Image 1 (cartoon, rainbow, N blue to C red):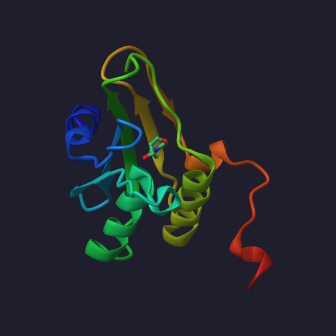
Image 2 (image 1 turned 180 degrees about the horizontal axis):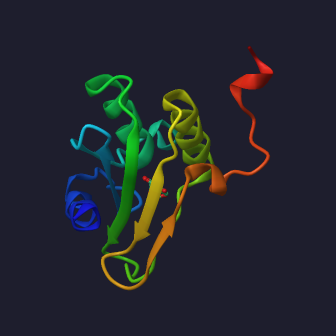
Image 3 (image 1 turned 45 degrees about the vertical axis):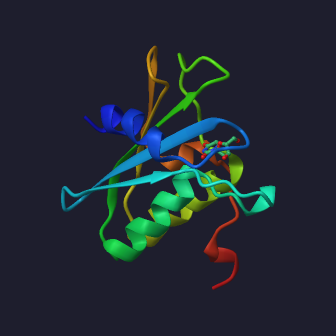
Length: 137
Ligand code: THU
């Protein structure tokens, strides 16, 4: 269900520059779902990935509620959407911090509009040897 929803919400991405629409949908421990999509900007670096839009919304709408799973999908007029994509480095760092903050692993479900679906048991698997708050506190 989460994958189907992630595929659908790609329609709400704002990606007039890359034409690469990303959708991310989370299921929370309270069984609620929250969606995020990438939001680009004419000043390119201002654009934000779907995953970080999503995490900001979750933190604000449902503070302290752990995230159980996040499905991520994409759609594009220019390239095929027949295989999974995986989060960029900045989003991996953000996902890892969210896991740490809520003390619960986040399961990632990665897919295109069709084809294989990859499941990663915890976002921390995507960022070994990470920089964490342990260095600062
Ligand atoms: N993008 C995401 O939203 N999530 C990812 O995991 C990879 C890339 C966005 C950023 C940009 O708006 C577009 O996809 C092309 O890079």
